[in-house]
Structures are given as structure tokens and as C-alpha cells.
Length: 327
Image 1 (cartoon, one colour):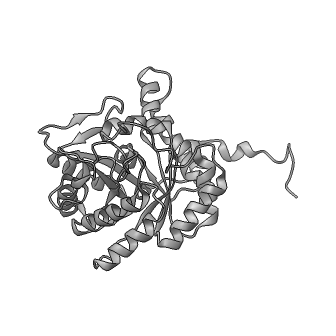
Image 2 (cartoon, rainbow, N blue to C red; image 1 turned 45 degrees about the vertical axis):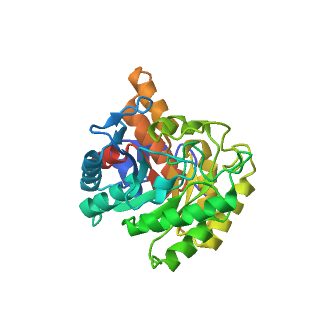
Image 3 (cartoon, helix red, strand yellow; image 1 turned 120 degrees about the horizontal axis):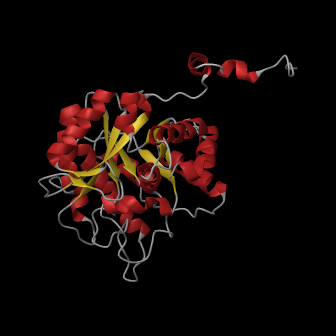
């Protein structure tokens, strides 16, 4: 039985910064953080993303600089998103050995691959002219199984270009198993898969679609991404399927609106759990801070601590380098 007030006074352990730091139950480390980075083909200067202040569409030169800065700050990893100059219905540039993503992977890995985990988003929406995550049927639906063939080819191309981990984000049924088989068959059995196991059809993705130039030209992604109002058991079923297919780590995306899902994943699985603090989460804090409504630095740290406390081992965040320096 614990003592009661006035003998018990929890405030004693909150009395000064040194005490609070000593007993803190949630600790962020720079190595927990993964920096999402956009690299665009055919530009000579980095392009600022209007809806995400401080985020850029990088050139090949500036993406290497961003990677060096992240590595020097102690960031654990970075994930590359490529924006090609030419798009088509099958996303041909996605697995082109000379496509922007593969070129950037080779160059970034050569630059910092010994000190930071260089990984790639394994999807099609940045590469298709319709903005969808897969191959479309004549009626305009995403063809799950035809898309899997493309994902397998993309994952192998990324591994060949030096990606140290692949991260399939399209939410196609069976994507992890098909990618695992393709990687193993091509001699890349040592490349781990970070599965987007619970990715919701979320309004929080809006600014990302400007940054990656991947807004759907018609329709939406609600047929394959999870319903925000869907049952928690659906997310747990997805993660169990991904693990059965060979996922090495799993992800929840977005983060702040789905802390309960992060917690259940952490309770259920025995692999690392990642959470993606997405573009809308970033943009809201930056916009509120720009208007003087919130304390920017405190909001950033509090949001990240909450994701960590919910159970995330890894956090993808656009503030990764800044926060790592602070830590």
C-alpha cells in the first residue's frame, strides 16, 4: 500500500530540472529519429515547400548536404522520396536504375551510408502521372496484384542502388511477402523491410502531396489505406499479416491521431515499431508557431515525447536533424 497525502507528495520528484530529468520515464535519442527527404530531378536549386516551412525539394547536391547534416547530428536514418521529371501510368522511373531515386540512393549512401541508415520509400504515387499508388484497371481502380509486381521490381532496384532498408507504403495486400521474395531471389536477403502496416486514409497527408507532387488526379486512397474510423482489430490484423510475410519492423502513419494504435502495436509485436509524424502534424505546429500562438520548440518536443511514450521505437519526423542537435 502506498503512503497517502500528506506523507506522499509526488511533487517532490518534480521540484527542479535535475530531478525531473533523472526520473523521466520517456527519453528521446537522436538515433530514434528518421528524416524524410525529398529529391527532385531536373532542378538546379532546392525548392521550398510552401505548406511545410523549412522543408525542401532537394537537388542531388543539396540532398547529400542534408544527409551529411543529419548524420553529423546523430540522426538514426533517412528515408528518400524521389520526384522524377517524367511520369507515366506505370511509374517507370520508380525502378529505373538511372531514375532520380536510385541515383540519389547511390550518392547519399556513398556519402553517409557508414554512419546513418539510408532507406527508400517503396511506392508508386510519386512516379505515376495519375498520382495513385499502383497500376490502375480500365475502370480506374488500383489493381492490387499488378501493383505487387511493380513493388517487387522497385524494391530490388532500390536495394541494388544501395538502400539499406526498403519501406513499402502503398498498403497493397501481400506487398511485404512479394517484396521479401523478390529481394531474396535477387540476392538481397540481408535487406530489411519496414512495413507501413497501419497507414490511414488521412487528411494529415495534405502537405506531403505538395512536397512529393503526388496528389491523386481523381478519386482517393480509401480503398487501400485504412479507414480512420475502422476497428482497431483491422490494424492488428494488418500488422500480423505483415509479420507473417517477413516484415522486420512495422509502422503506424500518421502518429499523433493514432497513439492508441502505436501502443497496441508495441504490446502485440516483437519487432521495432515506427511512427511517422506526418506533414500535416508538422505544418500545424509550424503555422501555429509562426502566428505566435504556441511555443514552437516546446510543441515539437512534447509531440515527439508523446509518440515515444505511446510505444514508438523509431519516429519519422521532418524535425529529425534539428531535434537531434538539441538532444
